[in-house]
Amino acid sequence: MAQHFLLSANARDLSLMKLFNMSDDEAFENFKAVRWSDTDGEPVCPECGNVNQHYFLKTRKQFRCKECNHTFSVTSGTIFASHKKPLKVYLIAIALFTNAVKSISALQFSRDLDVQYKTAWVLSHKIRESLMLNQDDEKLNGVCEVDGVYVGNYIRPANNIEDRIDRRKAYKPNKRTVISIRQRAKEGDAVVGAVRTKTFITKGENTSEIKDAIYNSVELGSTIHADEHTGYDHFHAHYNMKRVNHSVEYKSKDGACNNQSESYNSRFRRMQYGQCHKISNLYLSNYANEIAYREDTRRMSNGAIFNDIFSKCLSTPVSNEFCGYWQGNKRIAERLGA
Image: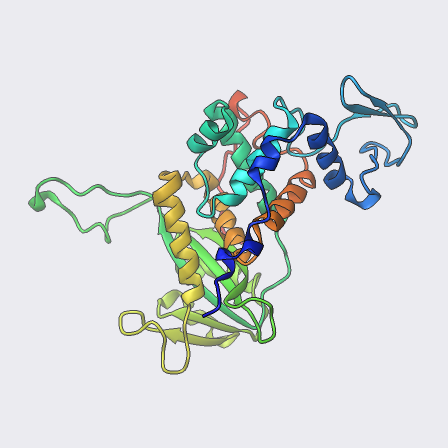
């Protein structure tokens, strides 16, 4: 039997030891090469756009534009702007985030990087924010699978059995549903399973909550595989719907199966129970999208994933929600729906 890709040497081409031994100058050159990849690492003024028209302030590791006199650095205008730690720390942080296939908690992040918990929490969410803002907006097509996983408002059962209630029927105002829509790979694709995943946060798995998410994410006429939840009955008019009754079978006789979405749910639960433990509804969309990204890149080497996340971070503008978070600049509303 052929060796699984993740067990092969091709799957691991990122060396943490190399990053640990990297000098500050080498880290600086790495940032330059990725930040200004279109100009082969030649700095571009973020104010006026001039290329190769700058002074290098060696003691400050900054650049000053000759045209507009604007001073900038390799992190200016990115989520790492106004950074306090050496650049090497951010490279190691992205590498740790990359290798944590079930996500990573802020507490573990703070221990591995030897930084305060507050620093680790904001840094991990900045990376998640870069993944969120750099999603592919193209609609899914072909054969897609959809399913929901419920999160939040756990009701602890009472000690005495006579005092316990049916938690399925209890009112849970903070309960949320993570809807995952996954496009299956087509014949001839380099990978098997799902190739693209979109996630949405709703207050339930009913038609009124999920219809906008599906219509805005899946091309009309595509094939959708779902379970027999009544929330998906509405879509038979616009999609080729195939349904599977999970109380009877995992795959129906006509081939209906949403195991790719179930795979997403499984990885999400492992993050929730095994790493983060408690996920706020305010940032649930960031966590959900992170797991979608990890599912979509499961067949890429860790070095390729590192480079992809690194480039996304440096192409993401300063975060409005996490820059100054501990000084009171916090998100005030959760991201719901499409």
